[in-house]
Image 1 (cartoon, rainbow over the protein chains, first blue to last red):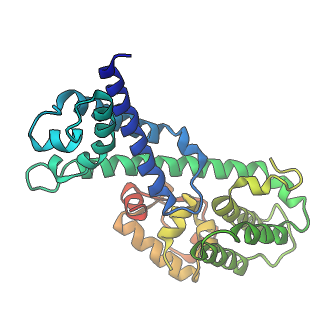
Image 2 (image 1 turned 90 degrees about the horizontal axis):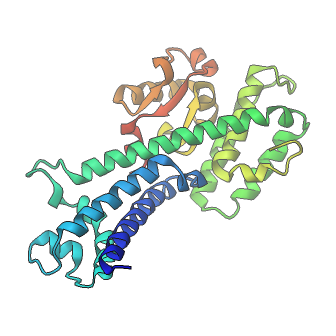
Image 3 (image 1 turned 45 degrees about the horizontal axis):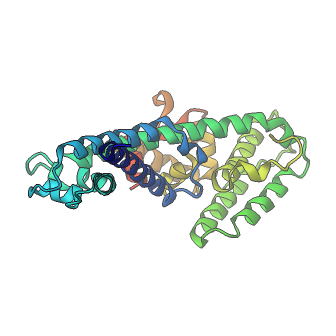
Length: 223
Length: 75
């Protein structure tokens, strides 16, 4: 393969991976569980591809022997096209978000645009996550109410699954469980009672959000 | 108590479930929710922002982070 084409390819792939990882770690530092769906989420993939495209342009326009600030910063003065592709791909996100891409001294520039696009992508991930949880809760509604001890089992499952998590996360999950239990309906378990419906969705929702749906798949009738 | 971390974890929640999962009494939850809506950080589906605790307890409208709220929550 032509070394220049390999350089372009490396620039695109490296920048795309760097952008994907930025989105992943932004979610990971705030969420108890990063949903696997981000691997195929169109919003995240589109943002990664956009930054990859930006890296392609940067690769084409910068000169490794150039002395201007952007060329030096992006190419790290690498003459080898493959190494330059790697350097451009790795640096492009830093450059987009730096003050070099600001309009004059306005503070408006690459960082603002990138953060805006990333927020839109993360918002879209959140929407997908919500739809998945609602679907899971709907599909397993009957099965949950068919288990007489479902809610006590669920509490044990959440506690066991959270054992290996950070103390802060364990505390957050425990606080939510406690808050929901404080609102537990006093009437006997009844799937037609709207308060029991909310109780089921809240407790199972906590399990879904903190532990993931997989831990519930062992419950009879759950899918 | 803050609803932002809860909505960050859950993505979006119907009003009744938001009330159930939030620590603090329903009056507190209602007050904070209305403040977040005014700040533009949170939106209620169909703009059905509850005015009373009863509307909060039984509401089915979805509460979600706005784009500004998402930026704040995932900084």
